[in-house]
Image (cartoon, rainbow, N blue to C red):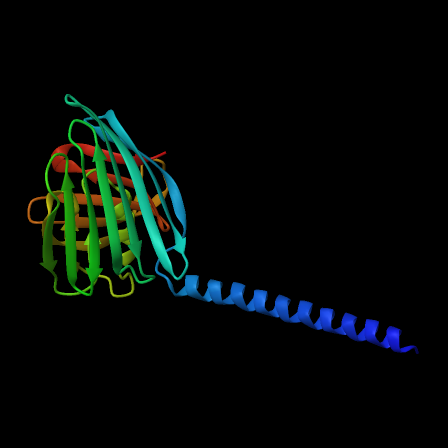
Length: 241
């Protein structure tokens, strides 16, 4: 065998080895990504809600929940019609795989314009609020734990996040710290599963009852998918399309 041929075969061996190593690295990366996802309480989801009051549609919402590296992003945009005109609200929540919030941004466009950025450092939430024609305003809230739930006005996908935080192995009534960003209001909610209930479609759906001091909301889930929200006291209903 000539020296040139030996060099050529050696080069082929290096290329083959490199390809094998690259394939192994790719396989490892995919496996690691799958492992990260399996450790999360979330699964990817996207869809649309119709927002109804007294049976009449007054708005709609488009949302998506998905992985973002080792963390997760849940975001939504809603359109609400009222006597004052049409208001668009958007909110983006960055979370760790266990649902602990990292940051949250929201904005409203309509008769009034405002936006805010919230960052979380353990149980401390730092809020920077920006109102049209005013200087930015900063406020901090300290909660009992870093597991803080966002339940913002007219962004109903956040109830899907809350539903995933409920520990079904533990069951019973569970309490969560809550922040309503557009109102700068901290508080708490309780969540309890009533198990599977018959629905109008004939399909059994899990019902979760969410309560605050002055409001009760019923969530209905098809597996991990939030398909319906009912607020009896306000005659409001949010239905997945």
